Image 1 (cartoon, rainbow, N blue to C red):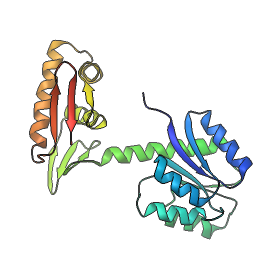
Image 2 (cartoon, helix red, strand yellow):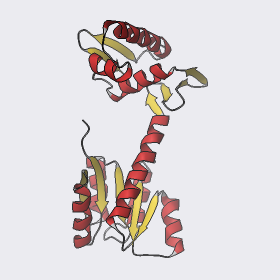
Image 3 (cartoon, rainbow, N blue to C red):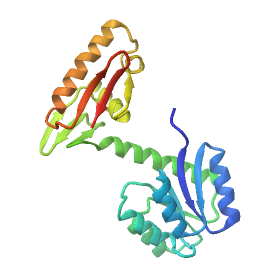
Length: 225
């Protein structure tokens, strides 16, 4: 089971920061709270959160500057700006810098949580659309394996199996578990069917010699890249 979603909250008002932190934690988020932009940047590098909630007016480094620095290296992480400002130019500036959403103070926790879930859902869908695997790009949604200008179509089962292998990359994908999930049963005939799909995936990935799908006897498969 995956752990709680990690959120970096940068807020210089101690009372508000603590309220938001505790409210999010009751909803199974893990929150790293920082009171200035400099600490927030170092925490971003150290903890690798899945989403950022940034107050704009902060000491040492404001939210816009912090977002600009993060966007130089990370174009994907969702960013929500918190601000007491209501001027249109500030809203426009926030989106131009790379913000994904903008919440004006005072705000309700329920509204913040709804926006967080919406951004995480959108972010994860985009990640599924373009998964890098060695020299390949795997588009899960379109069921395509792309290498340069060449596109290979995958069947639904091939795409599902490859996606789960990637999720466990360099670790063992449990044979019984994935059979039950994709085939409904881990009986002998389904196991033989999965072996056929593994062989097909190996052929489609063979143009990158650094990618291997190996059989871990009695356990399952391991995608090595």
